Image 1: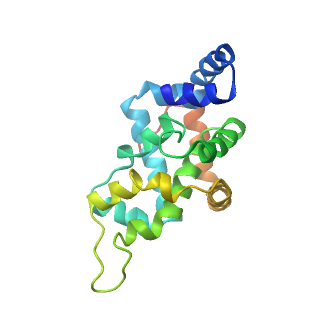
Image 2: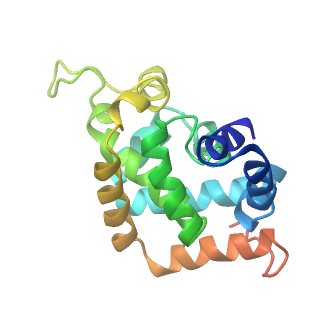
Length: 194
């Protein structure tokens, strides 16, 4: 939560930041994320995997083949609304979109980040062909953690990628994300564990 509080304190006086944090923590998405209920985490990971497979099949296969699960990076990104992994100016764009459109923006942002990092994930040493190093768990983790902030550093570029992901996202998946939000807030159907 400290990342959320810090982001709010950059833009608001302390009392308003506190009120903003309280309100943010009571939104369906954030409240649901911070509960960390295993079924809800698994559901979010499954929806992310579906969206990733649909939009970035090579990255999805690579992540699976090296043994990286979405829970290993996605939950951290979502819990901090991307403040921990992106620079403040880039994360601010994500926050603007999140406050307007809700949790679906978090998924689109995660896929947009993978789009930007796709070449680096699939070709960790930058080479292609027979002499190229194959991706492994260590190289994927390095790209998604240590290198992320330096590689995803243009707010306009990220915004363009988020828009592209959003345009290509199947309505079925977007509806499922909205259902997760509603379920977390107690206004929808039970979360599917499919």
